[in-house]
Length: 458
Image 1 (tube, rainbow, N blue to C red):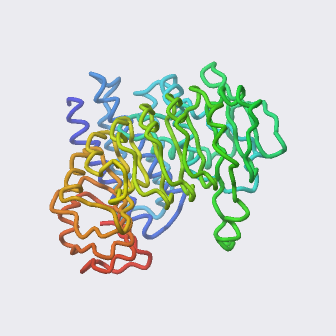
Image 2: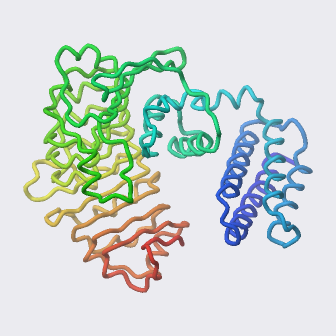
């Protein structure tokens, strides 16, 4: 049998069969370990599929092994077995066996170097703290430790490895040497691919001030996590948490000390930053810029548009921003843009929503629509040109409809859209893919299914 036939006639039906078995088994037994096993099996099958597509011939006939896997999966939802977890472990062993035949261990060890270099934290650094998953994954992406592979995004690969680290009792973390400044700013280096990478990490310093004498040291930094990084504990009062984790910058003069080594910069949640200096345009190797929840930020400089390597820009929860700088659409490597603000009549030469149609790599887009935002007819029509867009979040404003375009989106979030009107049947028509929908404070949605938490998966 040709390899294409193996993929179309065996692997693709097997993946569908596994999805059905997963829904059936987890409905009756919500076992977190079994859920992880299902997900690992599916990932391994996708890896096998990719290898078969790339190579002209497999090293052996796989039909017998895949047939055995299919029978085991059948047993799980046909009631043949009373021990689905044991059956799942057998399936995992079969798939691992097949994968090891096709992909030598040397290739597996080189495919994701993050496994040996991911955890650059010391246990003491994050002890008793809840670290934001997004922070870790963005950090790894900026250092090139995770990339898009086998049809998965870098974020998806990062989540896979993060789960592996969580599920492993011990991990081989990189060694680092470091010293603490005032006990609150940690500076350390990590060796990655024989290169020394420097990181500045704000453990708990609340007031940031960098002396000019520290600028030479700042120029060597590849990662600067100086904003908030902890998850706020849900069992505490939110205001109390924000006060406890309050971070304030005296000014932005320290940008003069930053150099072209910098790939990741997070100022998340830092107060008193009203604008970024034009010198940000000098950070030509910056990949990720996290300005989330900088509540005093009023304007982004035009020089921001010089960051041509930028893949992630987060300005969500920056409520004083009233527009985005013209030329943002020239950042053609952007994959994630959170907090895009549609300008109003007072905005001076803003970037329009329709201008973003040049961002062909954009996968995630969140849009804030203010009360006075100017939405022209056809702005949202141009979003259909985003062939890579998979996640869309629209918040606030006077948006009334999305038109009749067909969307290829997997995640849709609608919040505080008082004028937005759509029927459930129409939504399913223009979003035909399996969709995770989250909605709240959208009173004109009609015939929508009732949910306790405003989340629905079609």
